[in-house]
Image (cartoon, rainbow, N blue to C red; front, side, top):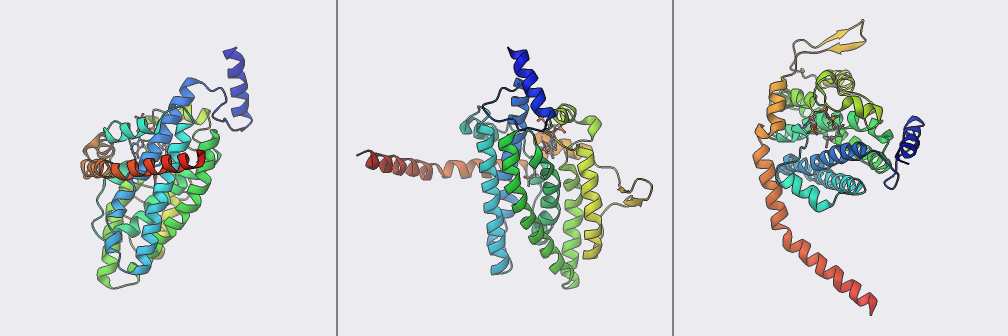
Length: 311
Ligand code: ACO
């Protein structure tokens, strides 16, 4: 029986058909999807924090409106992803518990501080730029609910990327001090952005299996290279310098060569010892606890409404 189910599953993957929540799937396929989708959801929710820090200090009404919209979009992305994850048989409560107890991973990038306004530009340009490159292939991932969530997420991410790049462009065309702020933000965000794609392929635990299942459509190193190749010309337009002296076009490969990534720093941040890990988790847990009365009130209200309809 299971053999037969497995053959149907394998055939669907081979034919590029979607696996849906009620379809039979190998237990490991289910588990690794819960792992990746939940980490992705947590990243969206924690990702609201570094930028939320600047909403009250955005330099104009226009910038404030755009930033507010972007941070709200991230909440939305988190919610679609939690919903997609729940279809695999794990509850929202359990997912939140994993995040709030510090057990769950979320993207390393959100453990760095946003010190100046230029950081908001750099995050949009680099972090959302990296997110798009990582997520466009996920629109054709094999698990239906994840793939469908990614279509909308990617559309919104491209707005986020453009609002960030526009901030950078404005700063780079501004006063020397503003251009210097932009350069400083690039210096601080460049290497952590490259780390977002995860360890190199030979160090990556899950890539091989995830490629077979078509959960991942491209490897960590392929996506990282694509990001670098795409971003270098954008930095040239801005007139600022990527902080990597080994960055050089390689005619033969048709790609940029780049310097060594500090993988010790990456693992330190992943293990909870980055500059802001503690602060991010505390802020998130406080927001959850302080919002309890709102959730309670909303539940009571919903129950009253339902009661009225019954009568
Ligand atoms: N930050 C934190 N942890 C990471 C990161 C990172 N940047 N990259 C890899 N890891 C973790 C993995 O989660 C895995 O840990 P686990 O075994 O405890 O789950 C471990 O390092 C080994 O890495 P891989 O085997 O390469 O893991 P995986 O195959 O899941 O690839 C990747 C990692 C590329 C991030 C993948 O999970 C993915 O594409 N996720 C969806 C996109 C996403 O989560 N984006 C979040 C940031 S973008 C945004 O929210 C704006």
